Length: 611
Image (cartoon, rainbow, N blue to C red):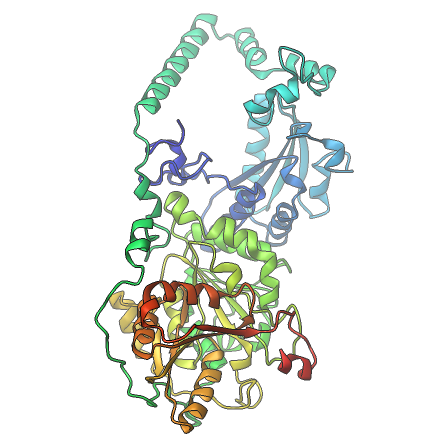
């Protein structure tokens, strides 16, 4: 019944009912939980960070069970809170068992509260069966937080009196038939049952002057309210099936199955290429006022800082000195030092807290230093940031910059091409520019939308070697900074729009990032032999512009999808498949996907070049 269209499983957002299995209401400042469970407490830490930076007097409470507290992300969140003195209280409720795992299998500490001490967080233990202790303890934690005293940790001793869920009761408590017999510690359960706060606190109130009649009236009113709510819930309609695709991001909905089928090999009028064969759309310059790829990104970051003021924060590792590759130096030179925030070396908490800061009213720009390190941020990106709009309509104005790519001689972990990790997860926008103009424009556009955006930057294009790319050439451009302002003002963004960067009639190459320049060079060589290749720069790969690609393939009849990532499991096969489905009868031969060898990225130049 909780999956009904108007239930509280919508997070407070009409139209999201039935999508989630957790109860919350963001309008009432109750964050709907996320599984894995530590996600919510880590996100709340980011909300507390936003409150601190925006000067809001706000107290935050992040309760978890003792099982959840074993997660590294929970402790990473507490570590950040202790480092920054955030106005938050963490509460660990020791239920004596997490699903079927006993406390001895969770921690070797005497109490869960002891762990807060190592992080410089005041911690104490209370009896979870005493409502007065709950009230007093949270009041103290609130006073500490709002007076600038930072985070606290309350360890609550109690016991779960039923299964993890009611379908689990028989295994935990034992069935009526005696099979299964149950494994609960009966003596311990009896101890905590005797401390049940409902009857005990009722007796306490009567002893202190409350009349039993008055309490009974209150209880009757509550029972009636619950029954009315249940009747209302049972009378609600189930959500319409077609609504499930709405609101994946602020800009796109998921295509329905019928739309996907109707698009199969759809006949459409053949369009003309915007460029004649051999004509190119990218122009490079070595003029003194031209920008390298990295300079374009730096200047876009400065522009973002000046547009959004105190709402923006640049979060990541080593941010306050210079940032990886010195990318933050222009921000410092332009007086934006206060917007740079060093984070503990934890990719997970960087993204969790940035997501929370976005929910808390900020527009954070986070950085993962290298592509391979993004593996540590998969949970906060995929299970949290990407799903919040779809789950309960949340705006998550978050941009995550991730440098990556080969031809940097940085070996595995640093050069990984990671785009296929994330393109399978609805809710993320992924930009992957190939040139300074697009890098400048797309970064500013990314930060203007209320969605989580991964902004992938190829390190080999930065121009760190005397302005040269990892392939030896220059892609410097004279960047027009006015174009993106007009697009943002009008809402007509280039996100989701590919560009034909070279005209051709004999073959289409579809690619993105640094491979655009490889494709252009190969196309020039083919032109010398009388073979004209059309090159498409996707620019954004989630969503990717199918229409531009399909139109080109229908003109040329041949297709190559070029990716830098390993051949197996790469994005190229998905793109190829989608285009084949809608242009099959226009193809003159089998399409080809070209990618790197199926190995990790090697360090040695000869090995890297061979892949």
